[in-house]
Image 1 (cartoon, rainbow, N blue to C red):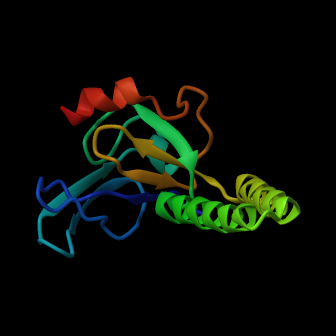
Image 2: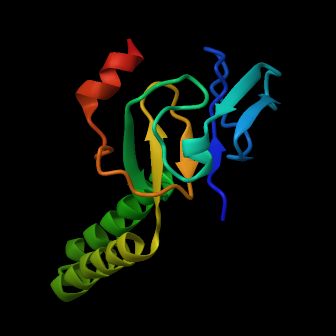
Image 3: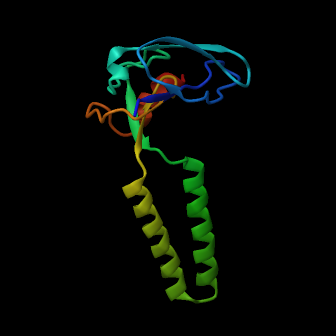
Length: 150
């Protein structure tokens, strides 16, 4: 499986996610489906081999790793389980309350075990799938992110 890149549109007003591109060595151009802005991907040999050293979109060198799971779906799951547990607790059904919360823990454990990781560029938020683990890339760091959001 080749590594793939999912860049964001560089337009300040758009920021749409562009379709995934296969990370084969070379230079490629793709256009934003929403606003038409052009993005040039300069894929290095290292990235084509599965190692992220620099971002082919913005040339950034700082990355973080997160689970490849939609964050909004995760938040929605927590809210739904929380509401259901609160309803059970309101009706003094403590066993069902803890069973609901335990079910949420089980769902979270399954997601943790079976969902892969994605490497994300701090500067442009391009996502890299199918790349090897790089110990230099840690979890999300708010201070590093704020450097690029300014």
